[in-house]
Amino acid sequence: QKEVEQDPGPLSVPEGAIVSLNCTYSNSAFQYFMWYRQYSRKGPELLMYTYSSGNKEDGRFTAQVDKSSKYISLFIRDSQPSDSATYLCALEQGAQKLVFGQGTRLTINP
Amino acid sequence: NAGVTQTPKFQVLKTGQSMTLQCAQDMNHEYMSWYRQDPGMGLRLIHYSVGAGITDQGEVPNGYNVSRSTTEDFPLRLLSAAPSQTSVYFCASSYSMSGVVYEQYFGPGTRLTVT
Figure (cartoon, each protein chain N blue to C red):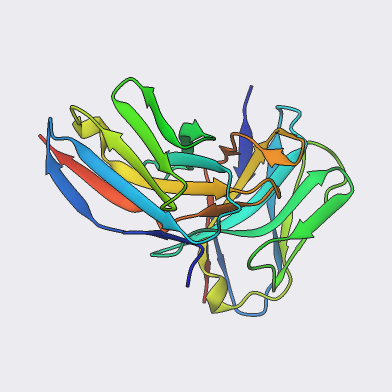
């Protein structure tokens, strides 16, 4: 079993829809939770960073962490075609090693 | 700032050849790492370094070698290329504090094909 599981998609939604992206993990030692966005043929870039359970908002993006269920989510409101990318969750347990999910490929259709 | 730079952008190797992928950062980050990205596999950590002179293995280190003689540079060496090493390679740097790695800045990647 992989430490981090993420549905690779692809996921295709119409512009303006609310998008929900999710990861589950098995190691309760993970303390830091991140979402990276990767455009085609580019390196990933950090989108959101959370530490505790609960929600964190940044504009149209909301990161949610449920440590009791070992489940993290990223919500995108009012999705735009420019949000089309691969979204990767990444988890860290204070051991200076990030573990990434497989990435979900998202397309927002105009 | 240039951020994280990687060279070359593309490379084709024959089985058994060796080469070095270059990575440099100008943000004075102590932490640097190498990942490979394969379809359906996400990013997998190859090697990482927490400072000049200190390196350690990640999840998939076999067939790769690293060294860190300066804070700025972190080259990745393929010792004897195999088709299984066909992948996109990303270098990243970050500051770390109290054993925690914070935001990683990624380079643009090197696309490697081994025939």
